[in-house]
Image (cartoon, rainbow, N blue to C red; front, side, top):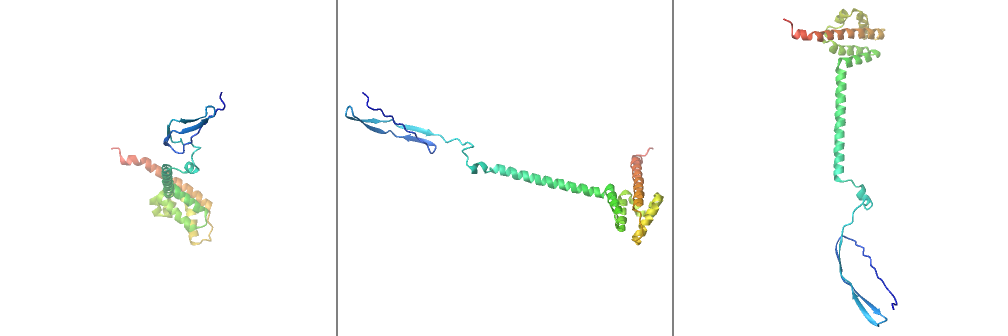
Length: 206
C-alpha cells in the first residue's frame, strides 16, 4: 500500500554560454513501511549552453541609437560631396552672371537702368561701356560718328552733353531711351549682316 508519493523537479537557468557539467547527486529517503533508509544516485548531466540570440527588443538603448563607424563615414562623405556641389553651382552661377554683365545684352540692361536714374555722369559712362561691346570702332569715334549713323539721335546726345556740364538743364529721358533703342537695333542689324557675309569673305569665289 502506497502511503505517499513525492516528485521533485528542478529548473536550471544558464547565465552564460559554454559547456556545463552537473555531477550526479545522492538522494536519501526513509521507507517507513520497511523501516529502511534508501539511497538513490542520479546520473551526471553534461549540457552545452548556446549564446542567446540578440533581437531588437534585447538591444540596449545605447546599442540601438549608436551609429556605426561606416554610417558616420558615409554621412561625412555625403556632406563633403554636397559642400563641393553647392560651391561648384555657386561658382558657375557667379561666372554666368559676370559673363552676362560683360555681354552686350547685360551692358545694355545696365545702361537702361542708368537712364532711369538722375546721374548723368553714370549714364555717360555706361553708354560708352555698352558701346565698346556693341560697336568698338564706333565707340572710338564718339557722338559725332553716332549722329552720322543715326541723325535722329543727335538731339538726345546733345542734351546729355549739356546735362554733364550743367546738371540743372532738362533732360528728356524717354526720348533718349527711344533713340537709344532704335540705335541698338541698327547696330544689331549691322552685326548680323557682318556675320552672314563672313563665310564669303573667308572663302571668296574665284
